[in-house]
Length: 75
Image 1 (cartoon, rainbow, N blue to C red):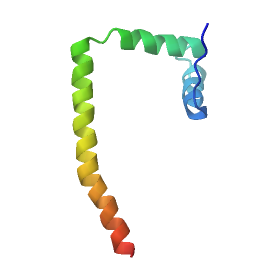
Image 2 (image 1 turned 135 degrees about the horizontal axis):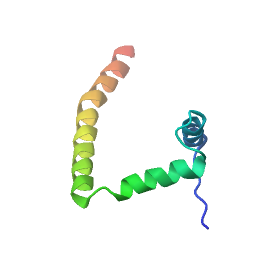
Image 3 (image 1 turned 90 degrees about the vertical axis):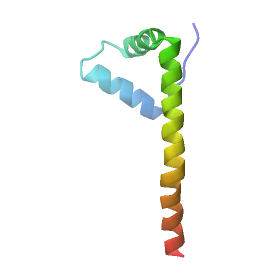
Image 4 (image 1 turned 135 degrees about the vertical axis):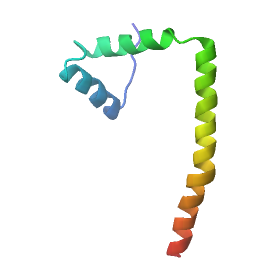
């Protein structure tokens, strides 16, 4: 069976779900997530990608400008 590598932060999140009693073990956490994601329709995935692109664009335009302004004010 293939191995999946997770960052320390991801493992901490998985372990927290197990510790809080939501899942029995790490494998159950991963399998539950995969099952949930596999039930999403292609149309829903497309809508999520569109929404993500809009949010990223908004943040890049507005927050990016705020960060630039903050850096310039320090100079």
